[in-house]
Image 1: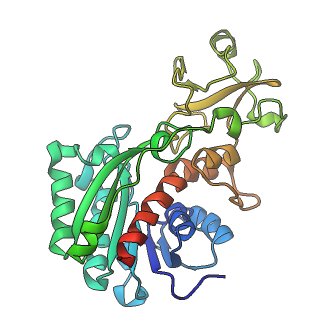
Image 2: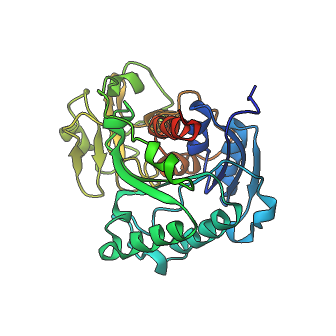
Image 3: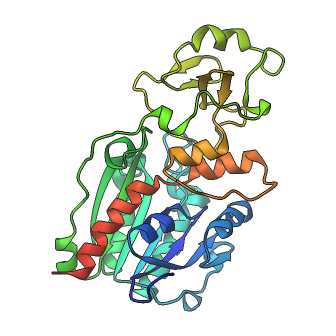
Length: 320
């Protein structure tokens, strides 16, 4: 049961609710969210009791958004990703930032939190980031931003760098905010993937199901790490970390994470992919296509990193 005195949060581009989950775990109260994708919305609603408005952010009237202390959002990163075409604001997915800025400007929450790909800062020679920060500063926010790797700040064995932008309307509150410190990585790949457990046959690679099976058998020989099928070759992750999960993983595209198990070579299951993102107890909708679940996991956030930043934001908002 949530305490009504907990700072209230509204989320945009919610996906399955990873940011909201991190803030809730830090002692906030997520009361309202917006998400465009109907499949991700189903997963969100399966795991969250808060109100969810399904639809384009451009159709959201700020008067329909409840009064909250914090507005959070991870607007679509593909427009700025190194893995994408990097069109930025020329891409309609990049333009949705201005809709988020519109709502922030009109609702005037005490704080804002934004997550995006590391490349956002360097996109278009830094101009994209300048436009974003200028818009938010003009809306009355004192900003700070930092790129954090999940393996260093979330105790999650995934190499996933993301930029986080935190802003406060009150300058004194902003001065109190401190980014979380780096923490030791104690979780291993084996803590997430049980190499002795037999999963459904559909996750295993065989000579019948994969034309280049002989190649991956020759290359995938180490059960202590994760491999990737990169369209034409196998790549071993020598860091003994999961690679950055992507939205097209496990569906036959590139960057498919593969592991060598007691029962053969297989891709990660959707449940394992969410675990790599730090979701400890997510419930997946029955009957949903695996392609949707992989996409949702790849598009999500690393929950423990969000939680640690949110805790620091709560301390700053609470004051002395």
